[in-house]
Image (cartoon, rainbow, N blue to C red; front, top):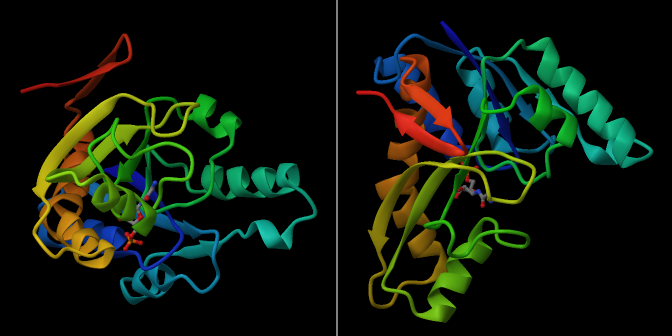
Length: 208
Ligand code: GAR
């Protein structure tokens, strides 16, 4: 069984897609062992509880400085003994010590086609605002491995989504979630669970 830890900050629709995928058998051989949120009020924690998954809040505001927060966060991660860590709308920069310890075992979902509309300052609705401002006709979502940079790790899966006339950041966000994110993230976890992910020289290969 692949032990998956999911880190969240908000609504948790991507977490829900993972829960549904595990429960339906679309994601094979996987258990979501813990959900960590930096935000006590994240609806994602309610989703976890409703499915009998342990939810833990580790909030930067509860600690005197970043280092102490990171220490507590890493401890909450280690306690779960994860095989795979999924950042599913997690809006905190993860500590470097965690990236080193769990190298090639942390994935992130980003709501654009990387390398467009990514990096520092590009998260959540802002990504879609920028895409609409630029007037792109195609956007999408990316699942990538997390390295020391912001959205710079090797790309695992991508899916394109069309921008429609009259789209607002919210309608576009919803379409990207429905058509791409909720499909790609369960698929990525299943690939891990089936041992199909090979990382070589900073590139990901998917075994057939
Ligand atoms: C998702 O659109 C996810 O791609 C994005 O935050 C949203 C979280 O929604 N993540 C980022 O922007 C990371 N840079 P959710 O809480 O409903 O899953």
